[in-house]
Image (cartoon, rainbow, N blue to C red; front, side):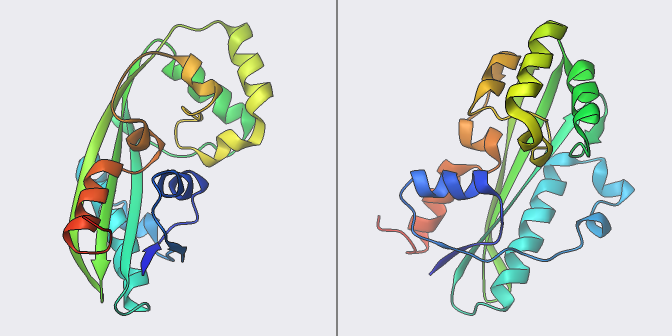
Length: 194
């Protein structure tokens, strides 16, 4: 059995659209404890640490299952960005990111019986365009509270695509999971047909 250790709708959609059969069993880890000041200096490693912790936690209670853990870190302006807590905070974040670059690091880990057997991470380099305040207000009104569930306050698979001037990275990576390497890993371990 393949298990997704996440309640993320975007990650579920990625696997569903790829035709992967799976169950959802969200991990219960203390992310704040893993996001130490030292860990925050390396967003690529941190996304793998979080993904691995999720996969291992769920795989301990699901013996024999292949458990997928995934996480994403947004690096911007020398620091890490967390999810906005309000629409006002989302608006301020998008204003700050307007016309500038950021990097989304997405990590994925595959665990079985309490041990990580494979992991990978991928960056997506993204440049927001210099959009107008009128565009931003219309975007926020159209997308609403859904934006608070995303670290960058955008959904690239929807209207959020219009926020960008340039994107270098796979759509699934931007949405929170490096899909192509994961599919290959699942085939390698025999969880998906070759």
